[in-house]
Amino acid sequence: RSASNVLSEILDGHYSDPPRVQWYTKRLKKNGAVATNKYGMELLDCSRGTNRVESFHKDLITNWGSWPMGMEMSSKLLAEKRHRHNHRVSEKRRHGFTRIGHFDTWLIDELQSLVYKNRRFFLFPHWSNSSDYVTTEESFDVVALQSEDVQEALQAHCEVIAPLPKLTRELQFQCKAMGTPLPFLPFSTADERMQFSTYLSNHPSPVATIDDKKAAIDWCAFVDGRTIMPKLPCHIRTYIRQWMKNQRSKDLFEQSKSGREKLDELNSIEQAEDAAPNQPIPLPPAIPQPQPGAMHNEPYTIVANSLIGEISANQVPRRKRGNRGKDKEGKKRRPRRCLTCMRQGGTNIATCKGRSPNGKCEYYSE
Image (cartoon, rainbow, N blue to C red; front, side):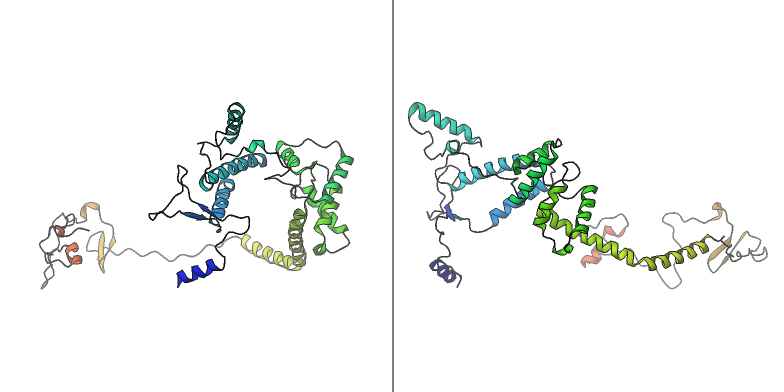
């Protein structure tokens, strides 16, 4: 049944490559030859699933989640990781791809161009010189997220407040990557929170209906480049939820004022009672010492197998090793038995050397 289902899916075209997309590639050996099974059939690798993608994501989370670093350092490391990952995949997936043993592909580009210039042939026929391609305007890692309206509003306001303050290297890198005079940062300073509260109090519409895109444009008018930075719509949207949560907490605190006052009054009464001087707690009288007549002229007496009185250490009877008390009348102490033999169901319980406290069973091991 499973084979029939697979055949029907093949006939439906579910295992075919979409137009201009190659999902199936030949598996290559380390020497670049196509790998085959014991029947001589070529082995194929499928890239339809998300296992390799999620594996790459897990690697990113492991490296960047536990290693704090700045944006510029992260951008450089990600670029190097992309380059090495693409090179490894090309060696594994691309038929005829040259295995150079390192990742400095620009050196191979120079060598390829030099050999072709002097000898008029390609040293690596299947190699594609990436250095010969024109650099595109694409950007990776840190990209521009602001809209054109926010960009224009920020540019106009920065011209008014010029000269701008000096930024750190990390913030300069972010501004260069996003093409802005000042970096877009989340709410973090007290001035930003106070200014946002003032902005919401003066806003004509309710807080829940505020347009975050328009609010991001309006916020550019409050930017000073020092304690107040420009915001993206996602920053506005996120902080509005936090602001509403804090406002509900403040409102609940005010509504519970009467109850808190009554609770404070009750606590003050209990604290006053606790501050009163403590009265002495009466204790029961001590056990009276027995009379000398009851102790038979000894400093101690025994009642119900309990010694009452005083006795010196020399008077305490001590039993030597190997000496035990007498057996009860009519009863005889049973001989020692090996516990290991008993647990294992052995027949030499009474004769095994494991009977003694330090003995070892000679028939079983645990």
